[in-house]
Length: 317
Image (cartoon, rainbow, N blue to C red; front, top):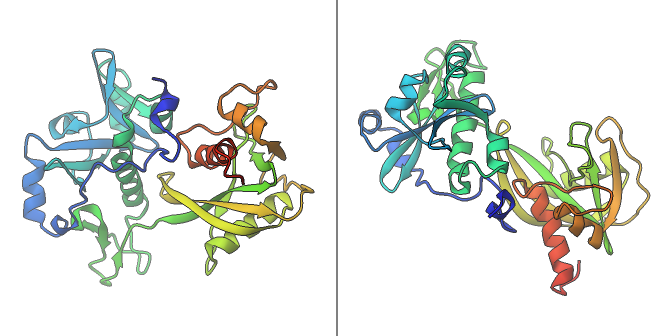
């Protein structure tokens, strides 16, 4: 089995749930403290876009015991992620000085999450819980002060809220909606590439939903702004949590009503039409020109793959 096999069609990263979020426990500080002390409790330790993993017998283990996490230098004050088979799972942050010390060890690694997930190092069923940990740790690190009065806030509700004791404002984690869409015109689909993409990679166009904007309007606006293509018949496919730092990718399809591309080079390096045969080869990494599609880790792969599959199954565009 390859890393590609870890994410079958319709199952990108971060969507498989293994946790009972057990929200009823978030206000029970005594219960959460007791859970932290239980031997079967576990934690994911997050540093920026990376995880602290234990290396043993040639494998990497991201789910650490609480004692391991603390020994490695994780910050006290854990975030309650939920329960797995009755055992508590927490998220913890770790500072740069502690990470520097870990880099010299052979039994521990600080590895970038995206790379580990794409290579199949982290089991796909754990990625949803890791996404929660990464999003919340990042939120706490960036929102330590009240946006209303500037006073230092405190973590409450097991890490799912910050309270300001000065002005009594409550602060909650935010999720930013992003539309990502496959636009088709008959037997062709529109894909683009950004400068930071790996060589030869093309993917679906995407952009943030703006204030007071519907998903449908965001799809139409982003496609037109980036490529000059106007579209209609916007339909929802599926969503993917995306912890970079905390977005929700809203997968959609749409039908183009013109085909003359005008690339916005401030957003894209290139955009072009691909027929179904080309798109299928790109997903398989078999395109004769070395062009590739998005990795199955990302929802973009599944948008393209679903469109290719529809032709193979005779359902059409």
